[in-house]
Length: 94
Image 1 (cartoon, rainbow, N blue to C red):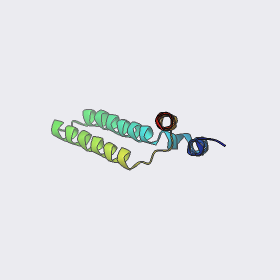
Image 2 (cartoon, rainbow, N blue to C red; image 1 turned 60 degrees about the horizontal axis):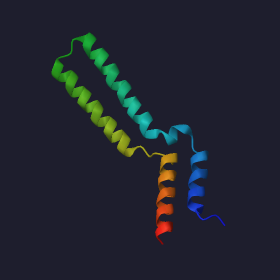
Image 3 (cartoon, rainbow, N blue to C red; image 1 turned 180 degrees about the vertical axis):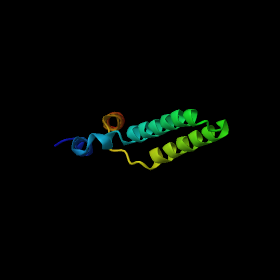
């Protein structure tokens, strides 16, 4: 009998999920970066007032933070490793 069936379930879930799901927050952050860079290039070429440029960049940054907050990440190898270490420590103590 396997002593860590939950870890096996998580490993199976991780193997089934698409790569984008595993790195969902990274993809969301990268999208925010691309939008911010595009805005910086456009605003520099259109002669937008500096305050507007800065304000829109702040809004893009806030939208990126909110996007990351509400983007559900998948199961990652790091999570499984941390759970395995946690289980190993508590098994050794008890």
